[in-house]
Amino acid sequence: MRKKNFNTGIIILSLFALLLAGTGCKSKQKLAAEQAAVAHVQQVEQAKTDLLEIINDNGSMTLVEKENRLNVIKGLNLNDSEVQDLITQADMTLDKIRKEQADKLRADEEVQRFAALKNTVLSNLKSVANAGSFAVANSRIASALNLFASEDIPVLIIISQENGIKDYDRPTTIKKYLEYLKDVKKLSNDIENIILDNRGKVTEIELIKK
Image 1 (spheres, one colour):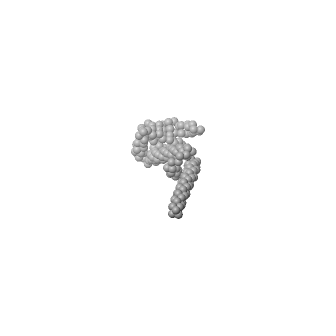
Image 2: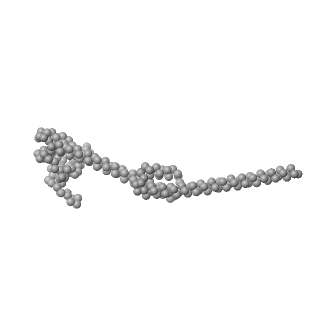
């Protein structure tokens, strides 16, 4: 009888232990779920902060840094509508920056191309004006004309300008202007603008008095 009571006690203790273990397991699961929820909220809030920094940044971050930070946030796959809206805004912000940088690069390249072309044309004009003899000048005129679409392309000389309105001297052609430089032996104009055709030949040149 005592043995039977003893066995019964063992069974009851075992059941109680299992009950406690199950309760403890449920408590751990609940704690893990709560911790995961807190971590998710923290991730969402940090993502919002980072996205707003990307959108509102005034130049403290490079484009690459912004792209890297945005890609990290996208990789989190956060299921939050505000985060997704901010990601869309950040993408638009970076697209705008990329376009601005591309436009600036093209503008810089255009300035450099014009400067190089201007130097080339000026060098040829000066070489004609500084020629030591008519024979040398004629040879340099022939060489300079290779830059132009024809020897009859117009040369416009600005004598005054105000409020964007230009007043020109009597128009001439590049051949006549080069002949003029050969005679006066002095270049007293600078280049204001040059127009090229699709072959890279000058079709119009605008000069301004120095």
